[in-house]
Length: 171
Image 1 (tube, rainbow, N blue to C red):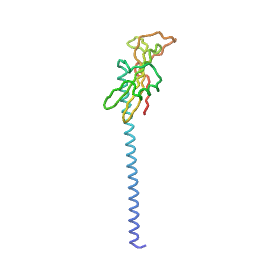
Image 2 (image 1 turned 120 degrees about the horizontal axis):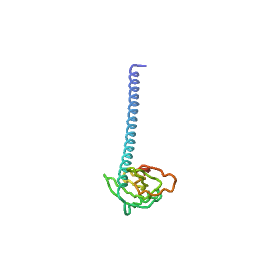
Image 3 (image 1 turned 180 degrees about the vertical axis):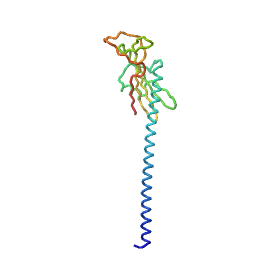
Image 4 (image 1 turned 60 degrees about the vertical axis):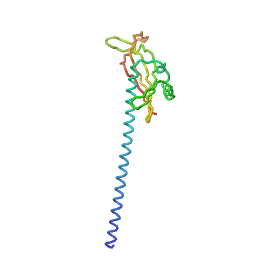
C-alpha cells in the first residue's frame, strides 16, 4: 500500500472513532437528561403529597360545618364527588384544592388516654384533592377526643390521637 492510501485509511479510521465517541457522549447526555427529568417529576409528586398532607391536617383540626361536612360514604364515591367539584374549595400557594370532611362518628371501643383520663375517640376522614398540572387525591383518617362512652366489648383498644391511616391516589 502506498503512503497516501495509508494516510487516508488512518484519517478515515480516526474520523469513524471520533464519530462513534461523539455518539456515545450524546447518548449519555440524553440519558442524564432523562434521569434529571424523571427525578424532577418525583420531586414534584412528593412536594404535592406533602402540601396535601399539610392542608389536610389544617382542615382536620378546624371546626367543620355546612357543605364541607358529610356523613360517612364509600371512599371512592367521595373521590367522584370532588371530581364533580362538590364540596369546599380554596387556593393556597398557587394551588387549587377541593375537600370534603366525613364524620365517621364516635368509636367507644377505640379509646385513648389524655392527661391520665380515658376518652373515646371521634373519627373524621379528610378527603382533599389538588388540581392543576399535577393532581392528586389524599384521604386521611384522624382520631380526636370524644366523651367516654361505654364499650360493649370486654376490652377496649387504645390508640393514639391524630393520624390513623392515609391513602394517596395520583390522577
